[in-house]
Image 1 (tube, rainbow, N blue to C red):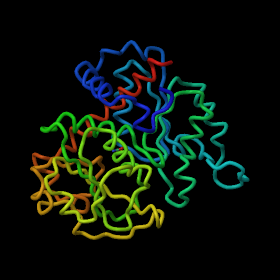
Image 2 (image 1 turned 60 degrees about the vertical axis):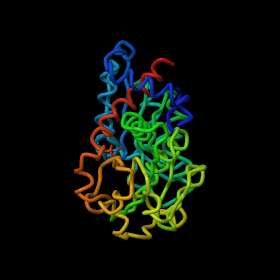
Image 3 (image 1 turned 180 degrees about the vertical axis):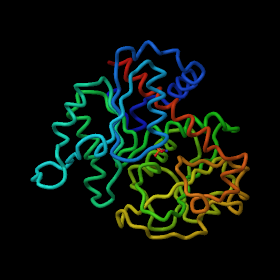
Image 4 (image 1 turned 90 degrees about the vertical axis):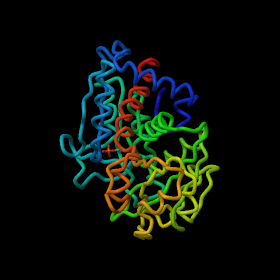
Amino acid sequence: MKSFLHVSDIGDLKKALAEAAAVKADPYGWAHLGVHRTIILVFFNSSLRTRLSSQKAALNLGLDPIVLNIGKESWQLETRLGVVMDGDKSEHLREAIPVIGSYCDLIGVRAFAGLEDYAYDYAETVLQQFIDYSGRPVISLESATVHPCQAFADLITIEEYKTKPRPKVVLSWAPHPRALPQAVPNSFAEWMNAADVDFVITHPEGYELDPRFVGGARVEYDQMKAFEGADFIYAKNWSAVGAYGQILSKDPSWTVGRRQMAVTDDAFFMHCLPVRRNMIVTDEVIDSPKSLVIPEAANRVVSAQVVMKRMLESL
Ligand code: CP
């Protein structure tokens, strides 16, 4: 595996889920793979889960993880080509990336969407430069348009908790005070479309995701109707794609609470975290026994480890 951005990069999902179960049952079973090898985890943005789960996954595989926080522990990096570097950016990615590549065997990159320029973000301008210039396999640790390690962990969690062969899974927009990227809902949609689930997306009008990620999923603008008979509710905020990066609604009636969960088939609640309580979801729902947010986060180690394992095996 040369890069990990899309569900297609992991290949057969049944095989990937079986491998995830094997890794979870025996986390140190492949500890020989990473000996005398290094992964550099590059963070342009904040993180709790991705930073820690990626390091833990690397350690389980015998890899040495090095974390680099851009702009805090490094120079500020220029990401656009052809610009006169007369501002606050001291170094360009074109030099920084091959230098980073020369110190390691694998690279993980977190580089969020700026939400100002759709074409720049949806071209994955920063991550693509790491793929093009590092000479190393590259993992998206949430880049401008995708968060595949999260979506893989979400699928592992659904596989572990489902009680029906083909559960109904609903991705629901929920309000948030700030404009957020579409990476998590994009990847969740991409992975659910590839999985054996009945997948529905619900959001207010104007919050349509990019059609490349929506695929063949059913879109239902009536949240209550979407939730009927659901087995898993996945809540997430995202900003508009059409009016790029804009907040079009903060409608509190979309906050996932007891009212919506009552029409589901006793659904599990999921969210990638961090979550704004009583904006995205009520305390009552996230604190209920049906909330999977902690096991879901724990599975981030498993998804990262499967991806790093595959990359090490193909070096
Ligand atoms: N879910 C997730 O990626 O969490 P962090 O932003 O804390 O890494």
